[in-house]
Amino acid sequence: MDTTLQIREGKTSLGIEFGSTRIKAVVIDETCKPIATGAYDWENRLENGNWTYALADIRTGLQSCYAKLCANLQKNFGIVPQRFASIGISAMMHGYLAFGNSGELLTPFRTWRNTTTEQASRELTQAFAFHIPQRWSIAHLYQAILNGEEHLSRLEFLTTLAGYVHWQLTGEKVLGIGDASGMFPIGETGNYHPKMLEIFAEMIKTRAYPWQLPNVLPKIIPAGETAGTLTEQGAKLLDPTGTLQAGIPFCPPEGDAQTGMVATNTIAPRTGNVSAGTSIFAMAVLEHSLAAVHEEIDLVTTPCGSPVAMVHCNNCTTDLDAWVKLFGGFLKTLGVEISKPVLYDKLYEAALSGAENGGGLLSYNYYSGEHITGITQGRPMLVRAPESDFTVQNLMRTLVYSCLATLKIGMDILLKEENVQLDTILAHGGLFKSPITGQSFLAAALETPVMLMDSAGEGGAWGIALLAAYQARNNKAETLTEFLNTRVFAQMAGTTLSPLQKDVDGFRAFMVQYQDGLSVEKHASVLNLR
Image 1 (cartoon, rainbow, N blue to C red):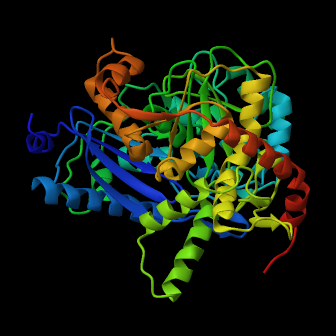
Image 2: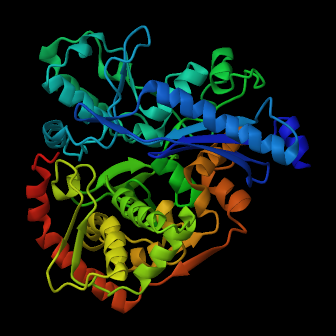
C-alpha cells in the first residue's frame, strides 16, 4: 500500500520514547520502516538534591515532539494523521512518581539518576535475597518510608515515567512486564513476585499505611496485548490541534531498556546489547539463573518476561559532551564555525589515534553518583601526571574509555565470574553515532565482537513503535521473537568489529589505573564545590 494511503487509513504505528536528553517520536509503515520522526530536547534538573523533571516539561515535550512529527509527515507526504494502527509509550525505567487519589503528584519526580536510597537498597536486597538497585521504584518507596515522609499516608498510585504518560493518554494504570521488572521483582507467573510482596508487607506492617503495595503498583500487561485506547482527553493532550481521533489502541508501555532490546533484536537467550547515551547499560538474556547475588548486576526481563541480567551505570556521555562543547566554544572564539556532528566525528577520529592506554590520562565521568563504584555524588574529574602525554588524541580516547569503564567492571562479573555466554552483542545509542570509535572501544572493553546495526540510530522510539505494530497485528500465534525475526530484521544489515589485541591490552592497562584512582574520586565526591 502507498505510504500516503497507509497514513490516511491509519495503518501506521507510532512510538514515543522519553529519553534522558531527548523525547523522540517515530512513525513506521506496515513494513516496520520509519517514515517520519519528531524530537524535543530536554534536561533533568538537580533541585534540592534531587534529579527531576517537571510534569509540565513532560507535557510540553510530548506535544512538541508529536507536532514536529506531524510537520514532517505533512512536508513529506502532504497529510497529517487522524489515526494510527497502534501507539506505544516508552521512557527511562525506574524512579518514583507517586500520586494521590485525585491524581496529584505527591512529591517531585525522582528519576533513576538519584543515588539517595542506599539504606533501602541494602535492606531490601538482604530481605529478598535479590539485588534491589538504588534506582528501582521499590527502593525509592522504601527509602521514603524509612525517612518517614508525610506524603505516604496519601499514596494511591506508584508508577514509572512511561506508565505515567500512558495513564494520561489512556486512563489505564498499567505497565509492560519489562518496565514493571524495574519497579519490583517479577515472579515465575509473570506478575510481581508474591513471596517478596509478603516480605515487604511484613517489613512495613507497623507503619499502618492505608494501602497495600499490590494495590498501588501498575497492572502488568503482556506484550502483544491491548493496554488501553486513546481517550478524548488523551487525544487533546497529545495533539491540541484536534486532528488526532480518540479510540486508537495502545501496546503496553515499556522501559527504554526493553525497547533497546527490541530495536536490536536481542530478546532471545545468548543475545545481548549495550545502550550508551546519558547512561550506559548492558542487557544479557539469560539461559539460566545466576549463581550469586551481585550488587553490580540487576535482574529484569525482556518485554516477553524472559530473565535478563542488566549492568546499569548512571553516567556515560554527559562529561564527554561537555568537553566537546568546550572545544566547540574555543573554535567559535577563533571565528571557526563547525557543525556539531562534524565536531563529534573529528574528535572521535582523534581518539582512534591516541595511545592504547590513554597516554597516562585518567578520567571519571561522574555527573551523578555511581552505585557500582560506590560514588555518592557526581564529580567529573580529569587526572594526569606531569609526564603524561596530554594530547587531544589521548584526551579523547580517555574520555571515551571513561564512558565504558564502569560498565566493564559489571560485565567482567557477568561474563567471567558467572560465565554467561553471549553469541551476539549489539550496540546502539548516542556514543555510536560516529563510526568506528565507540564500537571498537566497546569491543576492546568487553573483549568480544560488537555489532552495530544500520537501524541502531533509530533507538528506543523505533523499538516501542515495533511493539505497537506487534500489538496491532493481534496474532496470538506469532511470538514477538518470530515477529522481529521474520518481519523486521530478516534483511537488516550491520557491521561487526572484533577487538584488536593492542586495544584490549590498552584498555586493561587503563582499567588498572581507573580502579586504583577510585579513592581519589570518592574523596572528590564529598567536596563542597561552588
